[in-house]
Amino acid sequence: MPVHRRRGKCRPPGRPIRSGLDEIADDLVGQAHHAIIHQTHADGSAYPVDDCPIHQAYRDGKVHFGADEVFWHKNGQGFPVDYISTPIHENRQLRGAVVVFRDLTALTRLRTGEESS
Image 1 (tube, rainbow, N blue to C red):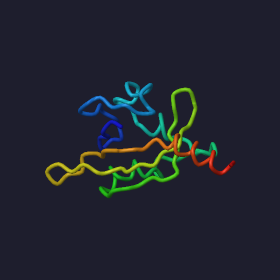
Image 2: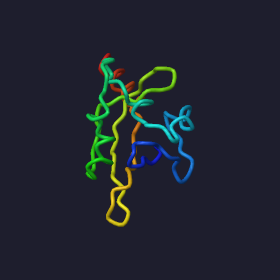
Image 3: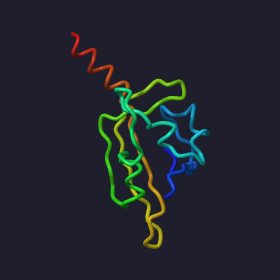
């Protein structure tokens, strides 16, 4: 995922990325990621940005993890993810965060298949 600046806006990564968010990667640049890919919980309820672990990393300067979370495609389809949001410090100042996520779609399908057997 692109690097987040302190203001919560995305900027492009240093090299191209391939992920479940490829179709909206360009849409993320310069935008607040939360409103585009992480605004809603899996149950459809709103996900306040202040509760978002990704957002918290570039506010409090601590590493945050997300488990059993959902990111959203442009078409409104959600997909399961785990992630880590790690703050970036430059010259002892908090500058943003790097987010690394794992698309759990295949794992979820495998588990569902095993459970229904």
